[in-house]
Length: 317
Image 1: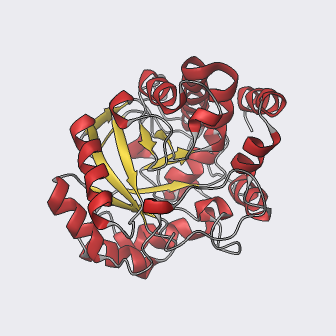
Image 2: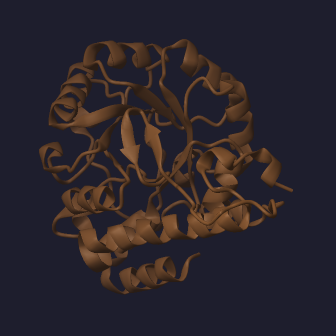
Image 3: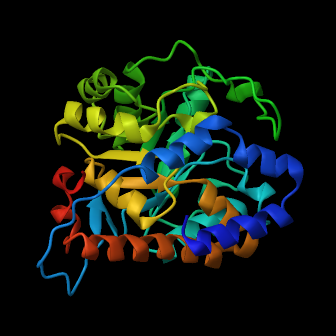
């Protein structure tokens, strides 16, 4: 883990209540496995390339970004900082990144700073699902991220409990929701929670504009594969037709470089951003993302890559 991220995490653990900390760090052995899987990868750097200027910028679903390091959707930022998701989205935008705003945010979507995406669970109340997606679009969301790995909430051992009521997930949801949300909102729809190549192809067939390789931080199916081990097969199944993103255990620029080398277009980070938010609000979120981007640029340069287009699977041993 980068020194800044480690410092922010340690400080946050001193500040946060045991209940909130348990919610953030829930995931059991999957949390350790996720980081270990990235750290175990080794690189084959290129030499004698001109890397006097390293560019980490990209265009993703219409947004011009300075970094491929994005903010993953996580709930209840208001339990971490008084300004909640409003501060997180502002910090992400300042870093030239974007936040995926969670369905179960503590702050209204109208307080978010563009660019941002809206994460949507498919709820039993489909009308409410669509209403919130449209509200997010009207507030400036440029894409919808459908979480596909949560037909219902898995039991959890501790931490905050998610209030359900009219927000209970719909276990009857199928790939048809992709086309439905895309047609009703007019926004690109990405599917999050994909770990299989065949599911990735189903997403494409249903009109998805991207897929996100994720195991929900180990908080749903406890023995789901690490995202590092699943990413390549999903990338191969997609074949470059749409962007593939990945989350889970990424804690340094080297981790990000390995993910990009496997074929990811961008990555998402969750826990480090929450720790940063806890200790310093939007400015600390910006510092967290800037540190990851700077570390990525250093890793790219040392690997002989001047742009993200130079990063490919040949870099991996």
